[in-house]
Image (cartoon, rainbow, N blue to C red; front, side):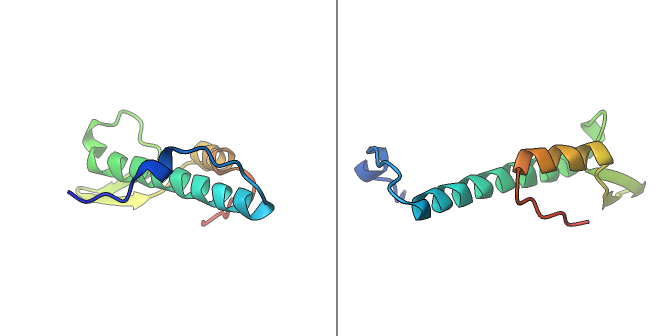
Amino acid sequence: MFTHLNIDHFEWEPLLSQDDVLVTQTCILFIKTNLVLTSVATELIFYDYVATPRFWKEIEPDAYMYAPDEDTWEWMKAFFGEGYCELR
């Protein structure tokens, strides 16, 4: 099994510059994006078991449309924070 983690990943490194903060913010944005994409994909995969779908609408049997409601859009804006790019 291969992994790139080593002892350096466990050491404390304080943020020294604005560039470090930008890198950290970018990493957090990538993590948040992956969480939302996992949620969107999981809802579609288990659509038949979701009581109240947030991201998808069934438009005909076995055909779905990505259609988040207004509450879901507002949640995503709050989750991603400032700089959120709306893709509607």
